[in-house]
Length: 164
Image (cartoon, rainbow, N blue to C red; front, side, top):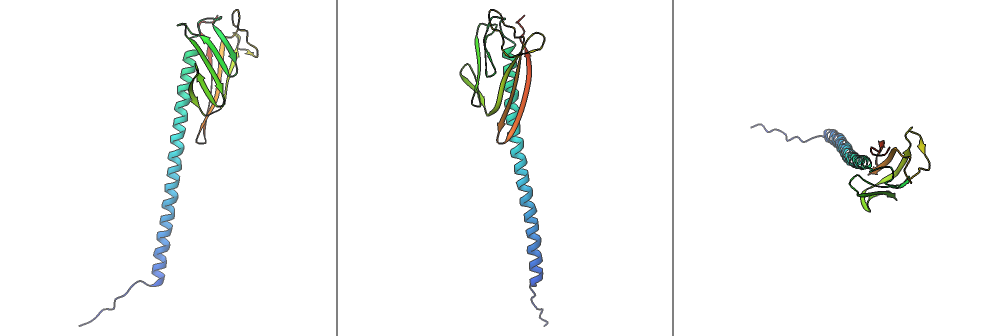
C-alpha cells in the first residue's frame, strides 16, 4: 500500500493568505466607515433641511397675516411682533441660538438669525417707523441652522399682504 505524505501549507502560502485577508478586511472596514459617515451626513442633513423648511413656511405664513399697518409692535433684527388678521398677537424672538414664537421654542441650533425690513420701494429700513402706521412693506428673514456639523442657510423676503 502506498502512503501519501500529509502536506500542510508552507510558511510563504500562509503569509500570502493572511496578507490577502488583511487587505480585504482593510478595504471592508474603510468602506463601512465611509458608508456610516455618508449615512450620518445625509440623515443630519435631511433633519436640518426639513427643520429649515418647516421654519421658513411657518414664518412666511404668519408674516403674511399681519392685520394692518398699525398692528406691528416690535420690529428689530432679533424680534418681530404683530397682530394677525384673526386678532392673535404673534411674537417672534431670537436669542442665544433659539427662536421662540409666543414664548414657545420653535427650534434651536441657529448660528445666525435676523429680520430685515424694507419699504414699499424695496429700500432697506434701518429704523422702521411703527406708529401710527408702519413704513414696513416687506420683511426679510435670514438664518443658518447647524446640527452635527451640518449647516443650512436660508433667506427670503415676505410681503406683508394687508399693509398698504
